[in-house]
Amino acid sequence: MRTLVICLLAMLAAVQTVYAQPDRRDVRKGNRDFRNEDWNAAEIDYMKALNRDSSSVAANYNLANTLYKKGDYDQARKTYDRLKETAPGTDIASDWYYNSGNAASMSKDWAAAVEAYRQSLLLNPGDMDAKENYIYAREMLKNQQNQQNQGQDNQDSKDNKDNQDNRDKQNDDDGQDNQDNRQNQDNKDNGGQDNRSGASGQQPKITPQAAQQMLQAIQAKEKETQEKVKKEKAEALKSRQKEKNW
Image 1 (cartoon, one colour):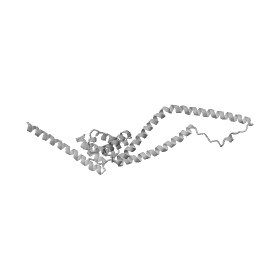
Image 2 (cartoon, rainbow, N blue to C red):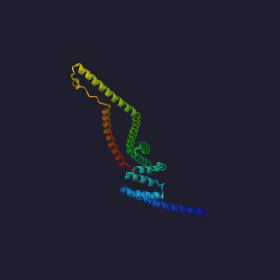
Image 3 (cartoon, rainbow, N blue to C red):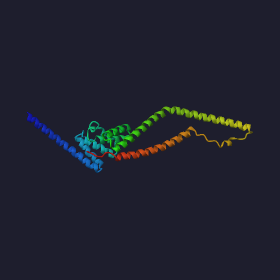
Image 4 (cartoon, rainbow, N blue to C red):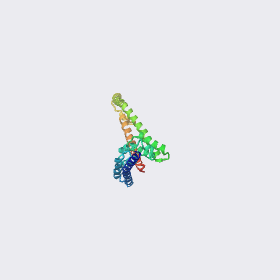
């Protein structure tokens, strides 16, 4: 009976080896296509490997790298996330965290990006790319939080601002009426002469509406500059993706 059990175990191991070999062949073929920058072919190869073994760390990680290279950042991120339980205990842990941070950055999930880069640095403190990306993601997270807080403040004060604008307009109208009345009275006192020309040296008053337009123009210019910086940083993130596949 013991001999029979041993034979059955040997047969089972042989079957598992037969199924494992195509998996590795597909991964290796995908790696060759990846190096040749044939992203579509590499994606197909890794998918074939995953059809045989959906838990394959190598196939999932390499597929995620390929999807990132294709520009499918959302799907790449989902594929990286499949390895949350397994990748941290492997030799690719630092690179996996780094690449996951890049994918999160492309989705503007700065909180996740900061944490991913931080974990990558804990495993590989000398990685200068990870340090730079960590600092950048942390700054972007801070800006995002400030914008959210500012948006909430603007929403809360919108009604007050509208009311204030209406009051300012009413005050301007009342002030103009009073000025006209005073001018008419002065004309009467001076024999009907028009004295308004004497006010030519006064500085014109900027209305709240004009001040708001000027502020919006300045903010639009700042936003244009920030978008340019973001675009340049995104290209840098893409070019520095950890491309060493298993």
